[in-house]
Length: 119
Image 1: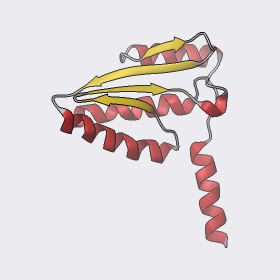
Image 2: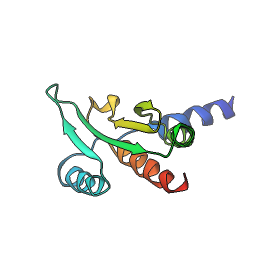
Image 3: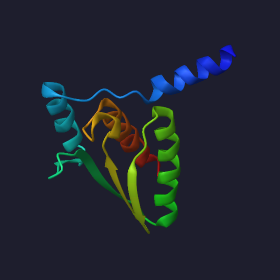
């Protein structure tokens, strides 16, 4: 019984997100934009960041997505993404923060960027 409680607690903490606001949000957006992420606030007041990754072929794009899925699980935050052949389009936002940016979006963006040179 104790093991299941510990596991549940770890899952809750792993996926917990803190909404980015003010100067912290501005700084995070500036860093992400320097790495070719686009910040978007749409008409529905939804904040998100997007980036397109290009690869030599489908196998490398799919390999990136496989590694990205493992990183997303570690963080407890999952991307919206779209793949056609050698292109992977990634969108990050946090539904638990009313579709605003969170620290989890930044963590996952940085984790995805760290994967790209490997492929």
